Structure formats: structure tokens, C-alpha cells
Picture 1 (tube, rainbow, N blue to C red):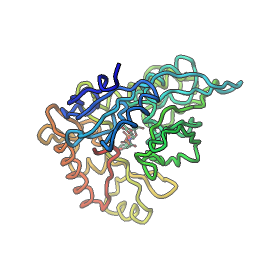
Picture 2: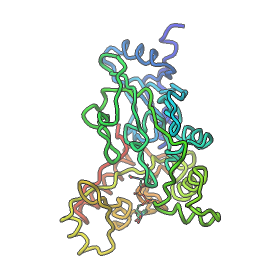
Picture 3: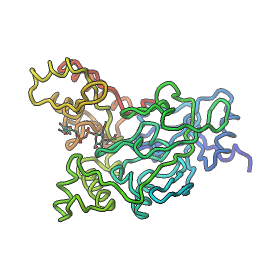
Picture 4: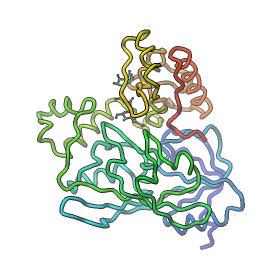
Length: 341
Ligand code: EPU
């Protein structure tokens, strides 16, 4: 079948991203293999293009005038095994949470704290996803990425990925230059439990489970329960998880803020103090506030939502108003975690 038949014109992106905005893509194509991506890119003729995974970390501020390639490259395989570890290679179009459940089912530990994070496997290293005390880099071994210029597959190990807090080289100097094709993780056959963060121990205790003897399935279930209690389900209320990153300020700045705002909390990072953005936003009066079709979520101020019928610009305007008011009150400039298109 000629390639053009697989490319659809004027497609609504509403089902393909979690903000649920009614924006259109000029052209749209689902890809199932690496060669289909290579082929589509070869025939672009200078047209802009974007490879979309789960669409859970993107805000479209208008229609997309170019080609959207929807990544449907699926599957996973054990590529190596030792007495203690399983090395699992997963393809980038796989749903992240399904991969977590697959590992929990096989009793392979390492990513259970990352349960229910929306999005695809390919997006996970892009922003070094993290939650409840665990970041992807902890289990990451390598990835294969397609160089979008040469169309050759290249391998990246941990060091080359330059992981940071919600950061990697693919969001910085290699932004837009590579497509992540597969990710290999090292999982533990004898899992180590991470229950220190947030409410995990409390939720386990409510279920009569001592965290010392908890199984990874218990951790996964606790994380799912906590996330579901705070974060809106994108199928019901459009959102993209945390809209902003937690800002990192220097110690002097933090100490000054502490004198003015004694309740402020900070967590030491190698390069400063990480301050909860949700707290800053809440202090500026945004939590639970509705502005037109959008607003900051009532249970987690960091999450901006589409109550239905919002436009991308409306959400972006709210985000900028929040950035301004946090800056005026705290002299801290919030940065979006979400990619603004
Ligand atoms: N807080 C408030 N107001 C709120 C919510 C939280 O003041 O409305 C304060 C609380 O005091 C809490 C602190 O903020 O101690 C941190 O809150 P929480 O544990 O909910 O985490 P977060 O820093 O807001 C991060 C990730 C989330 C992840 C959680 C749990 C970022 C940008 N976000 O949020 O990730 O689920 O930790 O580990 O780092 C995502 O990236 O989309 C995401 C949801």
C-alpha cells in the first residue's frame, strides 16, 4: 500500500494527548517500526514533524502545522540475566505503567515506585521520570536512539544521558535531534523496598502491612492509591501531571525566604535547595482556583487542568500568571516541566 494512504490529513489530536485539547494536526501517521519512522522522515521535504508518545507531557498552544508521528513501537524482551538481575529491553511505544505492572507481576523490582506515571517508555529517560523517592536513572542501563539526521541507531549509556532532576541530554543539547527507540533497565530479582517517601508507609500500615516485609506489589498498589487520591485522571479531567518543575534555589536565597516564610520547606540537592512548587503556588492563592475552563487542581496545586473546552493558550496564560505571581512573592522563576508546542 502506498505510504501516502497511511498518512491522514487534518486529524484531531484530542485522543492523543492528556490535556484533551481540541487541536488539529495537519498530517498524522501511526508508526509501528523503526523503518516506518525512517521512511516518514526521508519523505518530509522540510515539513516540521513531531514524534508523539503518550502525549502526557505536552501542551499544544494551537494546531500543529506539520506531521505528527504517533509512536506505536511495542514489545519488550529479556536481553540478559544473572543470578541477581534481569536486563529488560522495552520498546519506546510501550505504555510505561503497563511495563511497571509486567515487572511487578514477574517480581522484578526497581520501578514499582514509578507506578501509574502516564506516558510511554520512550519518554521515561527523556525527563528521567521520578516519583516516591525513585528516579529512572537508578535502574537505567542504556537506550537506543535514532539520530534524526543520519537515521542511524546509536546507543547511549547512563553517563551520556546526563540525567538530572527531570532532565537529560535529550531535553538540553540534543533536544529534537534523537528519537528514543528502546530502553534497557536492570531489575532486581531480590527487590529492595523504597517506602521512605511521602505517605507510602502510612498507606501500607492502613492495610496492615509492615513496610519491612512489603512486597513490590504492595508498594505499587500503595503508590497507585496515593496518586489516584491526589492526581486527576486525565480521562475525566484533562491534565499533564505536574505542570512545573520543583525549582532549585541557592542556600542564601532559601535562608532569606525562610526568615520571611518560616513554613517554607526545602530539600537539599547537589546544587542547591529544591522547594516544592506546589507549596509556592498554593501560597499565592492558586490552589483549587478556577479561571475560565482551566485552573490549578484542588488536591495538587502543581497540576493545571482542562475542565473541558479550554484552549492551549488559556492554559498557557494561566501558567504564565502563576509564574508571575510566584516570582513577585518569592523571587523564584518557575519553569514548566511540560513541553510547550
Ligand atoms: N504541597 C503543597 N500543596 C499542594 C501539594 C503539595 O504545599 O497542593 C507540598 C507538600 O508539602 C509536599 C510537597 O509539596 O510535601 C511535595 O508534594 P508531593 O509529594 O505531592 O510532590 P511534588 O513535589 O508536588 C513530585 C513530582 C510528581 C510526583 C510526586 C511524588 C515533580 C515536578 N513532580 O511532585 O510527579 O508524582 O513528586 O513523588 O517533581 C509529574 O511529574 O507529572 C508528577 C506527578
